[in-house]
Length: 185
Ligand code: HEM
Image 1 (cartoon, rainbow, N blue to C red):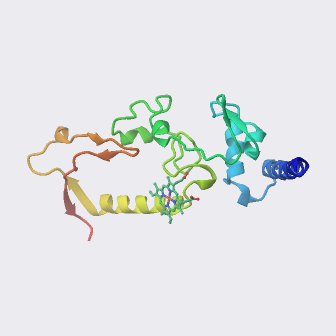
Image 2: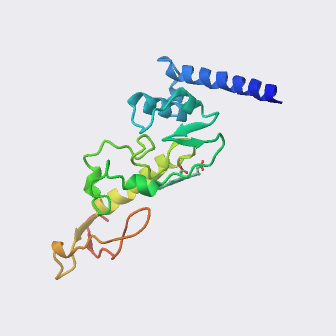
Image 3: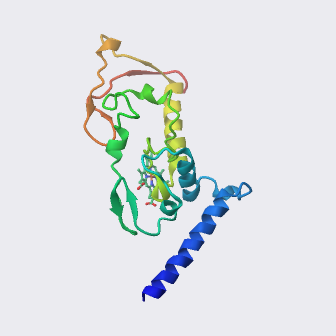
């Protein structure tokens, strides 16, 4: 039994070794770009993890140790997305509603940079990213393009509050009330 297990392990290990080598080949097929092995190899190369990512982690076949924690093969690992989104090393005022904090940022929400993962990360990350990004952009672009937006009579800019509700993602506590004037039908 142990012999069989050893053999299986070696077979799988060489399979993953080959897969990694194929991904590292400069003439690799374009279809390999952006897949999980490619993403992990890039993270390994950039050294952006707080621990040393090895080829063994990428093969992810056996136990691995992350920051001193032993993780057995096949474990279900829950990622604390709430804490990642509020990491003071990345976000200066994480608890405030500040959409402009994304403007100057190089972080890619499409599962490329682990500091910003609205669509999850890795092989179980959201497969609908392309559609979702296009939909959100289209909806927002339409409301901005088709209407002139103003404040209700008697309300000043400084009256707009930025209070948020607690939760993983940020929702406004009080509705934002605006006046929309249709400019393009
Ligand atoms: C703004 C919109 C969206 C957001 C924020 C979002 C976010 C997410 C997140 C966080 C996950 C879990 C990823 C993980 O476990 O690491 C997920 C999974 C998934 N999403 Fe989305 N998603 C969006 C739109 C869509 C759309 C438009 C589709 C399909 C057309 C879609 C299909 C899926 C599917 C099938 C999964 C499960 C993937 C798996 O478990 O392997 N999502 N999404």
